[in-house]
Length: 117
Image (cartoon, rainbow, N blue to C red):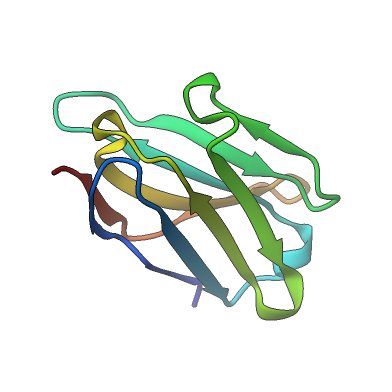
């Protein structure tokens, strides 16, 4: 079956860095668009960053210049490098993979990121 296993969350001080990882199994990872979403308490889930199978990236404005999404197709893994973290980055971060033709979409279990002094 399909599994997305996330790791790398935790508690970090403002200005610090974290690297999230999401390892996929059970899918042909190369064909999937990969992405990271986040959901803060009391807020809707929002898109943070995406990376297509060809390497095109897209970021929400609030993380541009601070976060970097990357992927390793050989390891079926997508990463999110988060630098210069701010308290407003505190949220549960979710890995997402999706494709069209056939349409498929899968989510990770979420990993907590807390930015606090």
